[in-house]
Image (cartoon, rainbow, N blue to C red; front, side):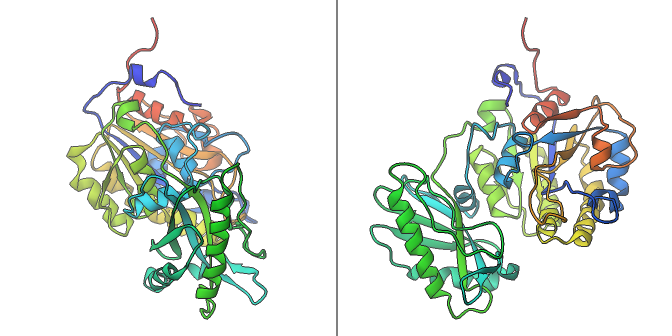
Length: 399
């Protein structure tokens, strides 16, 4: 739930907020009895934790596992239960695709299926962009009844499919079963009027299989998150912020565009993202910076690699701290425990650092230590409110 009177009490100030998101940061103990954060050597995070307020966030609702879109939307101050933004439109906008009225965008994954049509790898071995881009172009040969499709390469195994035609609606299910060992699903209409989109999507899936049949790894495609352009008030309207997004991954740029952030060129690595932060430091009062690799390792079930990615993230922190943001928030959009190989419902660790945030004096930034922190456990959408309060961007509420 979001605070409904935030716009009435928001005020513009020169103070700067940095929201540093390590995607899928939260984890869970493996057979060692420790989580990835508990295992990682994180001297900078630990020093900062002792001088900050710690807590845990619930991205949407207790027990509910969220996607990255919902998790980030909460961190941007929006109630993800009110604003249901699906993956396709985020991926499209983040890739620089302009959607016309009535267009339906879907996020695509190249995948691997066996001779029986069963999915053996949902991400086709995370094939590199130079291998997947020609395959995406090949899919433009698909011919659909009563609609057209344009397919765009994104990054690695991802693509975007934009469907256009009369009478298309986005209330349809996904073809992606979200796990290996199952065949692609038939797309179904979820609301009256969406039958045409379901039929078109299933035609597309059938032709994708035919067009990729000779490929060894990326011999099929899965589509999900069918969506049209949503109506969401901007962060400038809601919070009187001048926000900017720095992300190497298109989906996060797309979501940031939807909420009115300026998209800064962050290159293709976290090092380049931090260079962009330094270049544009004087231009904005809110910066969202995205670090993807913790999530990828968790989804792959690679505990050791997630530990390594956390340690890499930690090593970059001095560059952010050197800019002396008035408020620094470090958290994740959701948890992605390696032991589950997927996003999970577990609360997400969060660190809030500012002159008046308080110092919990806790020696290491971990899930269990954050559970002991002064911030307690709270909705993810309150993270921005807390950051704004600590940056003196909120007036008093009520008489």
